[in-house]
Length: 116
Image (cartoon, rainbow, N blue to C red; front, side, top):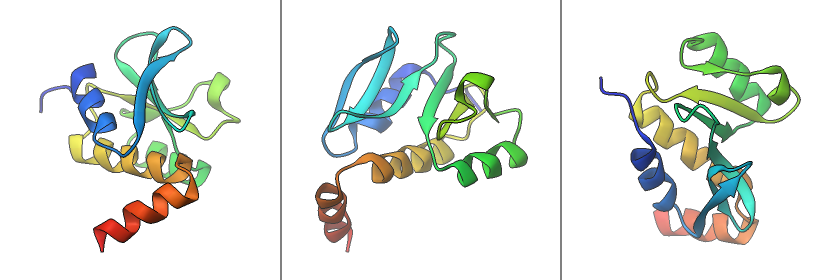
């Protein structure tokens, strides 16, 4: 499997409703209505993704080569994802979950209604 790159991450993020591209700590980032979804880590090869803490623990336990956390993120609902080893479909699912967690309730409800 080829490693994902930033342009693939960008395409996934901008496909979600009302996602905006910007920066966070000097790196490319994506937000919905001002709330951070994901950002490129300083190494340029790792993605920081908003997740629920139980989901983060499950991801790390299931694939520690791809998912990890540093002390900095230990108390935050974030997981670090190595782009070189993440499955593209898993990353898409993580991106959609991050969006659903961070999007305003009305926007998330409108998207859910469209999918029905």
